[in-house]
Image 1 (cartoon, helix red, strand yellow):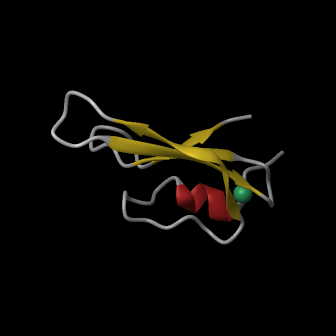
Image 2 (cartoon, helix red, strand yellow):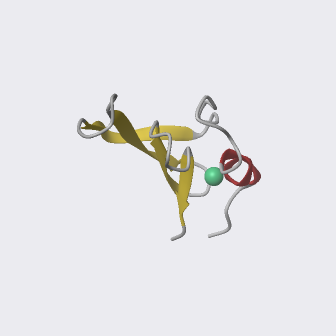
Length: 70
Ligand SMILES: [Zn+2]
């Protein structure tokens, strides 16, 4: 399935970017605590429109929004 325009835009958003209107949360956030002063979280999302899957990470060294190609 083609990645919809909103999902293509989503990949460019920053750590403060909000999920677009058709992205819904999948599962519970994964919380990582450890070496760095502050832990970080990952949250999975799925697009209701094109079925793309994203992971949002608050980790400074990670991409904010990672698109998983199907
Ligand atoms: Zn989409």
